[in-house]
Image (cartoon, rainbow, N blue to C red):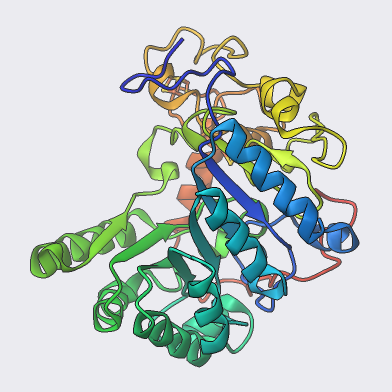
Length: 378
Ligand code: SF4
Ligand code: FES
């Protein structure tokens, strides 16, 4: 079977063209919407070595991987980041650094540029210092602003990635103005997806439909004013769409994440599916992991689907939605993503939306990402 509108196959013959290397789960920030596992600190002593990461990149390139993202946690905590970027460049990858900016210096940026780094995605929480520091869980706004200017001064193409929550959604016009002043090429106003830490904080983070509609109108106004000078991405969250997103373009289709300890994952959230085990690149070749491991086979194609997806004519568009969201919200990854209005579990999402529509009294406190919280959990 091929996907609608593409020649990519879903039967395991596809290539992992989009490779994400989560070099470490360690991070100086404590973002309340962090997508890392709740028990992120459990892999602390098991991170892959420089040579192991280099082998992963060589094997991925041989499998047809084209684009590589260095991510985390905070990837700049790895002292060997420049060496890894250099290896990726030599192998012919298009390289992207996904960073909070904390830990970057002009000297490191120059070294990364010399190693061939092509692109930087800088995470930003808000245009307002108080809100930014609240969402990040630590004082970081001023340092981030400074490094954003340094990234642009060195000529890197940059996407400013701002996770949107109810705390910062009213600041969207200011965030757009800030991004425009910084001269970024792309601004991603990324409505938070509710996994892991964001799910823990969902009641505090999820904006209302009215807030989303106001933000969307502001984005459209800004797009008209700014023309081609900056591209703004803004997608209404799947909770409000009635249809799930085509997560990862289909499970095991084009995306491969390698976790800090070497676990090969069809997406970076996949460890939330506790019925699957995810073997490591330490024990298997990447080719075996991609083509044959049970974890990658589990939801490839559509033979795993239950009703209503099995007989739905939209299944080649969204692949039944997100397996991790189905797991986290319904307890079974084989269920239809409850973001879909056809799902028998859609009431879970409707309830979360109804809560977001309630009048605010400031809400409860945000739970900052912290070691120890997830012990015994995911
Ligand atoms: Fe997609 Fe399944 Fe919903 Fe159909 S029923 S729209 S395939 S999630
Ligand atoms: Fe894992 Fe969607 S995040 S399938």
